[in-house]
Amino acid sequence: SPLLFSPSSQPSSSSSLNSVTSSFSAMEISPGFSPWKSYNTFAFSAIVSLLLMLPSDLKSCRRVASKTFPIKTSRIEFDLPDYSVRRRYQDFDWLRIKLEDSQPTHLIPPLPEKFVMKGVVDRFSEEFVETRMKALDKFLKRVADHPVLSFNPHLNAFLTAKDLNKRQGLALLTKVGESVKHVAGGYKIRARPAEFCAMGEYLDTFSQKLGTIDRIAQRILREQSEYLTELRQYGAVYSSWAGSEEQLQRPLEGVAGCVTTSCGALEDLSDNMSQDFLPVLREYVLYIESMKNVLRKRDQVQAEYEGRLEAAVLRKQEDRTPIPVEVEKCQDKVECFNADLKADWERWQRNKRQDFKQLLTGMADKNINYYEKCQAAWESLITLLQEKQTEDKTSETELN
Image 1 (cartoon, rainbow, N blue to C red):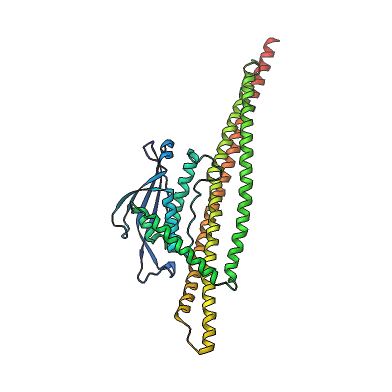
Image 2 (cartoon, rainbow, N blue to C red):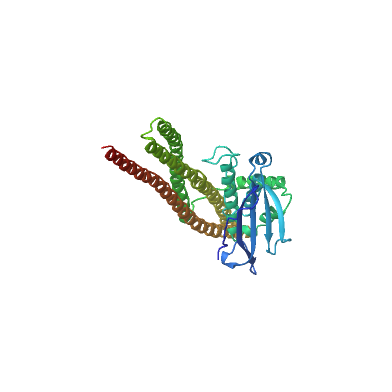
């Protein structure tokens, strides 16, 4: 069974906080647990709740770009039932680096970009803060949803430790990176297996599609912004005109009101695209890069195994020495890498289908809502004009 989340929003009674609450089932490790084995060895129990709190005072956000996480848990690997830790973006970055380092065979969820989030310009704006908060919350949910990553000790440290000792983690990452470069330089893969070639081709195609959609969506946003500016000027002209035309005052004010309603509806539609639609696209662009990185690591492991195996076979032909244990360990490592990557690929595909169904449904609802608001506004104007016409005819009849 996968580790399931049941997210729910619980607005804080305090005006100084915006909160997002996430609950997820915890896991007990079955006997003989190994991260290389099937995920079906997990059994789930207990509850962990995370409360992500963010100051709504944007001035304080400028001074202290951090968030407080009060944590309550009943998982046995946590020493205490309650924790309260303060985390900055660099702490999330530290966690992701440690996860990549300690779980190289698994797909690590991406973090939102630190300074640039498409659709949001000011990194201290309320929209940027809200979008960043949602993205970081989603990152934690992705990690906690994973049957291996959720038991990683670095996640435990992230949720409980006061000092994450990030410098040591970064130094270790550098050593690992140098080791990977050494392996990549010493061996060259002969041929990637067909199923992993298919994965790579899919990622390339998917990346191109997302890139095209993102560019068009950005252009639509710019055009909507320009149209919104002109539409507001357009409505202001009718309001000014109504003040100098007594006989046309009501119709002109009606048109101005319709334009104002349309402006509000369009603004809501644009906000949805910039705050909900585009961030999901960007997350999956980053996800694609993460998946490609895991594929490259898998290829390096396979190349190392093929190189060692070829050398061992040559030695065996020359002096009949048995295949070294190191070669068998490399083979086991390749098989484990393949199994973990396939499982993560299937999980990623399930999440992707669910995320995009939800995203597209939300987009459809927002567009329907936009057109319904505009239609209702202009229909009310028609009613007003018809009433005005009836009043004018009545006045003419009385005069005659």
